Image (cartoon, rainbow, N blue to C red):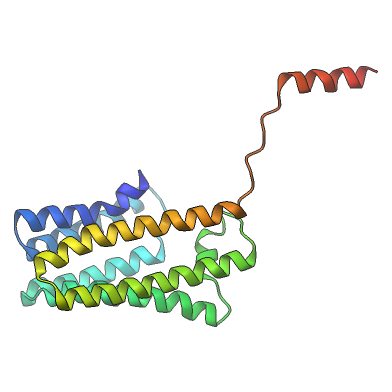
Length: 193
């Protein structure tokens, strides 16, 4: 359910684009991003730094798109956002920090080398997304860019997450096996002897 909630602004953006235009879609994306943050705050959930950064980017570049009536700003928003995320992750690693461990360390336990590889792969992935977005923004029509951004970008992200999950599985502990009733009976008999 959380994954669907995270992709809601993208879905609403695409629907508004199809029903109206890029400027209405951008306004809808701004409102959806604000609503996500407010919803998390109302539920007393911690808003992650990446969510605040994303909100800042959509407010700045979305507002510029609408006010200047220029699609360039919404297109470049993604290049700059992905680029910044990639550089922040890789830069933190260069300074001996591990941003993904600080975000996810309470949820999963991994050895240091796994955290390192995970962070490097995410940093590189964001830089690839930035380069792809810039290429498509410069070479495709607005309509084609929106489709590639919504469907291609989402699909690429989902595939990357699944590959990461599959790779991380080898580091996660196995589920403890349920004790069989007969095992308990054997232990009771052993204690009686």
